[in-house]
Length: 129
Image 1 (cartoon, rainbow, N blue to C red):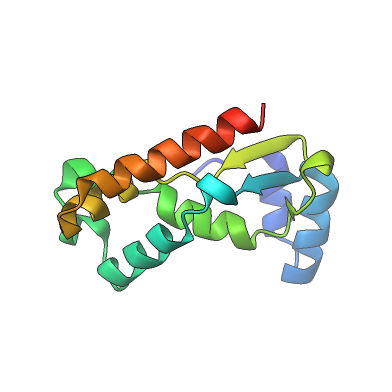
Image 2 (cartoon, helix red, strand yellow):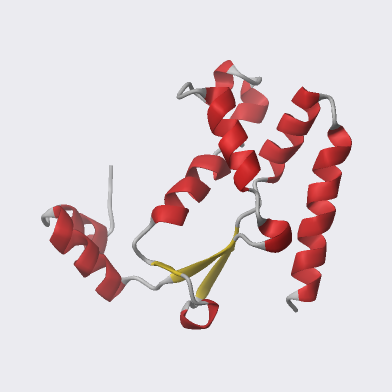
């Protein structure tokens, strides 16, 4: 698989040096996950539902293939380039696993819970303008 020069070079470095090298070359990011964008309960519930299995064992492939945001948000929350200061980060990422929210609400028989979460997220975004 082809990789960019920076990634290829960083991959050959020892783990401690690798994170130092990446922080020099890569921009920091801020993960919005408070207020109406706090979906930690959804991410935790999805992890419990999947129990380490691929998503397509819990949902049809057409839905499961779009659940990539859950593991990505988990990884981003632990990433060394994550900034906890929104002013210092040129990139901002919304913690908004919308499909996971909808699927879990439907699984529980409470689809209105999904729309309540989406409304709260929209209100948070509108207030941050």
